[in-house]
Length: 136
Image 1 (spheres, rainbow, N blue to C red):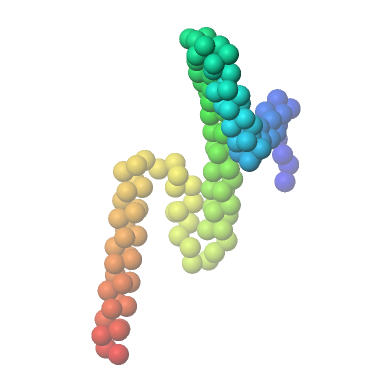
Image 2 (image 1 turned 120 degrees about the horizontal axis):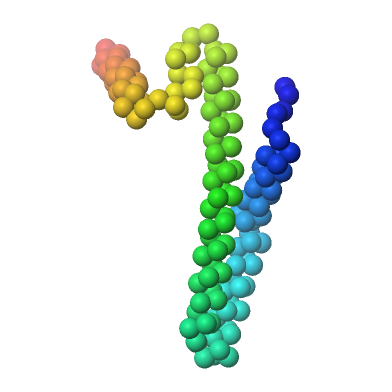
């Protein structure tokens, strides 16, 4: 299968994936703990000044702001890949309902109607199962 996309798109995807993996590692968490510990220890030296507080507030805000976009990018890609894989599985099973392919694009109301439909199927199945147990 050909992989299309500009070098910029591929480059950002690679960067976002690597960054999300790094940020999600135990080493990143330990580094964050170390930074917080150093900041806390430096408090007396800076007399717990407004600037001392501003440093940690600004740093954490900027990092959080950037990481949110990186993580969202990787989650969007992962979700799309999972949906496509599920669509392929649905398509390949003869008895599957092909109308289920690509349902993530339906409205909330349409999704609720489908959920209600399958809830009724489940209730009917449970009812049949209970009747069989009572007969036995």
